[in-house]
Length: 433
Length: 177
Image 1 (tube, rainbow over the protein chains, first blue to last red):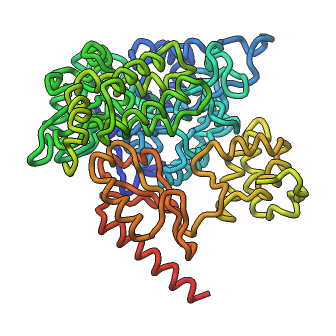
Image 2: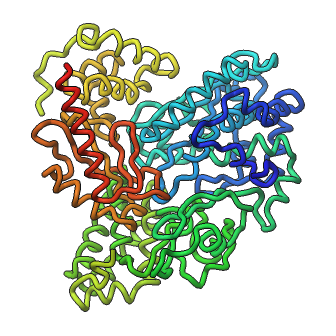
């Protein structure tokens, strides 16, 4: 693999990740060196803004713009915060998503280098990696890499003889999907229940312990060393489409070769599914797919030519999300799949707001009835009403709207299947495995 | 559960030196003592298997927070056990990729082999069966986690082989001690 075409993954080694000196020999820490020694924080911010890097955690918000909301005061200014924080969101719990794990386990130093660059830019002297509790191997490898970076003078006081200090800590979570929501993550990091916070104030102004805080996803951050090393033009030219850079796409479900591939941003769904995942397993055909994790709308075989960038997927009626395809074949029941997704959201709802706390289990009850063959046509109407009750603007955070996306699109695209369950009084797919 | 009338154990008597040292480290990297709460719960659980009422009270006292608040935290997170668990806690992934690739068959086999349902512990105290949200092994599903180990590409037979092996290990270790 080539460093210039596969910047994020060319150094990935899952069997034994590169240690500090090996990573440095392969061109590691050059980006961080450039940032700290060649540029001011303001100049790095401008570079990241002009690179048009967007968040890879699911929302696709421009990273440079997010950073620019952090207030910058002269250190003697009374309004200057005593501290700012950088937090890496490594709470990868979106069902069907396993891309960050590859970077965390395969090339931990890349993330540390990236966090040095990000912290330097926003002026944070303390940073945390918020890692989901189940990623034990990643925890071990990250801690090892952090220790090595301290020994090599890339963390701690006066990094590389500059005036910049950074302490980086690993925090392992104790499991809850909602921790991936950035304000819930901040509450979790403060030792509280991970209920999302009301916004505003946004974390960039008042986040962790009330101080300005930037929360960025693992894959987003991992682009930084390469932008600083190879330049903004190189980054933008990686992709032929409207969004810059590469993207780690994935595919799971009953496809021939499930996995992860770093491709130019804007590769089509068909390229990922057929050229890389090998298409559906023998004897199966494509019924539909979720393009970017559990909380995205279903797309159909007719959407295979859609480029997997933020705008194109949105135009097709879904969201790029995390870029991991969850593939539904024609022998798996779509009602059962949606039921499984809603069970997940009902279980992981933090319970703070009523539409989500009561709406998600209600949807589970209705879907269970339909799947088991005791549902009625009225249940479909109730599900549609729930999609409205749980939509954006009526809930405290994006969890319930995320649950609505696969539900509403399934009701639209697979309506015949819902009706058939009700008319036959059983699941027509039963025994499909 | 009636924890109101119990005498609060003094943390310095109840928590071990090893536990306190680890908790102190977590406090040192945070701005407030209570921010170390989740880590403290995980530390004590790693030593004792689960979080008893006494453990909860001792940790809350040590972190200078109310036990009710810490109980709210302990019951919020999936990986904190507020009931005794078996030697091996099986976290079987029940999310969508595993669902599409044979989770139901693996679950049925595991339940039958152990003779327990979700949330229960086998009579010999070896296994507790819990579900887990997506374990991030979707390209190698179905998946389960036992301790810090992730087992992937499960079939009903493979899952039972793994449990059988763990059982044998536990038996031979039990014989040694």
